[in-house]
Length: 455
Image (cartoon, rainbow, N blue to C red):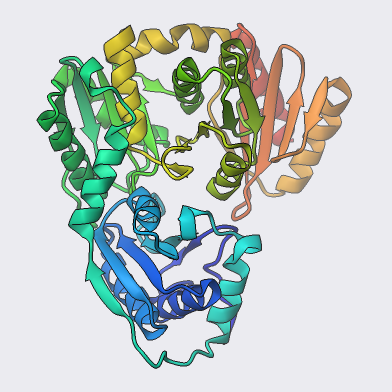
């Protein structure tokens, strides 16, 4: 069989009919079960039109390998992560393309204990097995059990344990599911909170799952996708707003005025909340924007540890360091007490408690935004990214106080700093700039780097 182009560094992702189809999904499922010697596997799927068919093919492949399949049905990726540990399964697969274009789909997979899969921990062997396509049907075929109700009930109870429900007050939260998978899971959480006496009020927009995505692919990280949530927050008079991507493993925040809160400030806010309860704890962060988080963790008495960007890298670091929390500026948030995995539901619950205890979200991040202004991620499409990055290095290396090559190149210029990363899949270079106290240093820094990148 030919090589499978849908394998990335730590998941499956590709164009339908080109990189991925139901036959390939079947082979991947068999390779997954064979490589992990799995007997019990959790499976779930997102709302995309192609996901149900792909999930059926995955299920068939697992059954032919003799596996007992625990079917979650429509769910978020994090519900699969949780269910693998909850049921003591040997692994899990969620069929999802998250925020990728309409003609894409993929799979996110974990091992026993909800541990991440990458090339070193089994993904390369799964690929080799799927490409060889030399399987023998198990003498005793597997079976399928629908565990959706039991799994969601347990999941909802777990995520709600992250907050003190008695501290919640009558605030209003605007939620935008983007017609992705978040709606039903959010409703289950809202019902649990209401039954538990929480006086929160919710305003919902684009809430029903719809695989045609009439509002466009849900990806609130893109600036052009934010105005609808911002306006809805203002129209509803909400205390803050939340928007999710397609499989809701990322969540994005808006204050009461509809202003988008950049991810690095949410990371700092949540790190501070965990360290208030456990001051000596470790927090993991990615290398793109770091000063705000490092300052907060240091002042709280904690330990900040930098990891490469990407969920597999962060999860390995979380486990290696026994970190209580980890965050990426791209809105992935990881929790030790949620099987060291990322969740898009736990963060809004934590923010709701913080707002109830300490006041408006805008006020909670205002001082941090002033102390450590940042640019947000800026993408440049270039003819020759490698040459452009070399020009930047030539310009800034002699001036840099320190250069960090963990993930792309980070140049510390004293009062300002920037990280430059090249995309692995397209001719794009990603720039993030931050500074101490002075926003003009960010503006000038962006222009300086941009001028050199563009030649």
